[in-house]
Length: 196
Image (cartoon, helix red, strand yellow):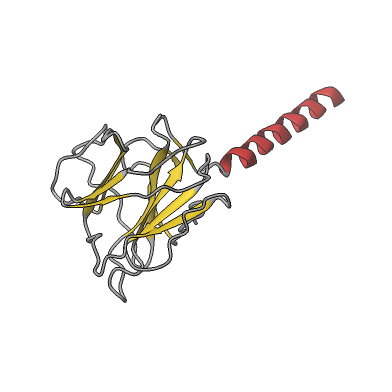
């Protein structure tokens, strides 16, 4: 009887350890492209274009995002610069406003400022990420989308997640190419997503 109780106790401890270890792994993906769009803060109030951002989570080691393109609502396009030291589980926050870019991810995060003078992430939209070979990497629709075509495996009937006022939309868990694991939560640029 003591052996059975000891086995059950050890089994539950093992399950708890696995839960703790894997609950900190924010995003996993089946992509072989090296990154996923992991957070979007759109349409902020206040100074135009200074707070909105798109965050990428790096999901492989030695990823080079130089020349990758973000396309917003099939209209606005930005080419990303080289960021040194990108490794698995690093974060790159791409701000539309002005500020000093930090293009060294050796500390686990980097920031890119696009220096746009106005808001470009509308209250409804689509964001597409392409690599430097113009190959599709990721697509996210939010708050109803911009009316354009969906890409990848995103369902045409999926209007995307919506953020509460002052919050961002963030992916939690696997990237299923849908809004299934996207939630509204407090902003967490350049760090793991937070869900309360």
